[in-house]
Image (cartoon, rainbow, N blue to C red; front, top):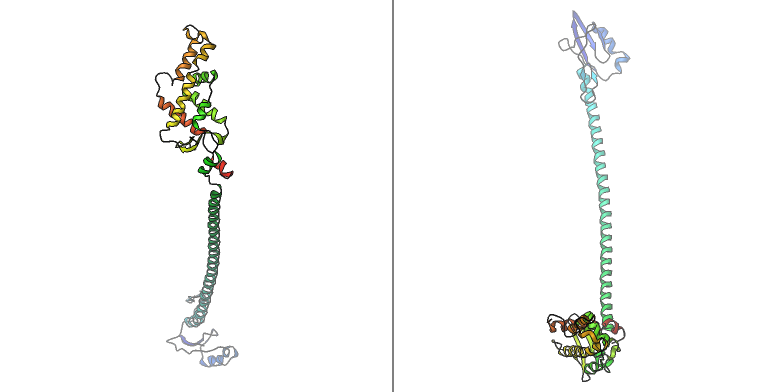
Length: 324
């Protein structure tokens, strides 16, 4: 409790706590003994030099505001006492706020760590699945490779066995050529189709009339024209010049030319320039000897050999399935 002694024409006494003033000290002492005043915590007696002025009517005293809660007081000492308690409360509130913030951060951090742990677990599971899947793929691929190898071993084609065992009774090339008999239809087809296609058709058609295992000609590689020919009861690989095939092509071409008389017998007037069969006869003769304009016979023979190789190609997959 603070007590102030103030003077205005006469000495006055003022109780700040009770907001009580008087001019006599005896009256002031009586006030101090009252129940109202005794319920206070302290009082202060201040002489006239240190007292505050009692406000006159309509006069406004200076107020003092709390820096923590903005509550105002008329007396600075009351403000000081209030700020001490209010400041402690403010600090406590700040501590509580900071504590709650720290707890929230810790909780969020724990949740983040838990989430990261779950992600790591999921990532590990994913890696394990990928490893298992990759391992299965490798195993399956290895099995496929092994199966393919085994399948290839089982279905591999044995050319030597095919020629010498399955085709051991095949005709010799010379016997085959001697057996070819040509007709006027073959002669006219050469004139119509041309030398290459006409002669090729004669040889290929005669070969296809025979059983596969009786043919004297087989091709192992049509792209590189690797051809095997049976002659003197022996299968041998044709040389790079294909000399035996070229000889056979010339023989067929010669046989065809020997049938010119058949056309003349059928159309006697073909030798006359004004005959409707004259141009046809000249076309047949020209193509049968290799084509008009002196075409390269060797080049034409190469084309015929290519056609024969393609048609006489051994289907290895087909015969391999049969166990050759």
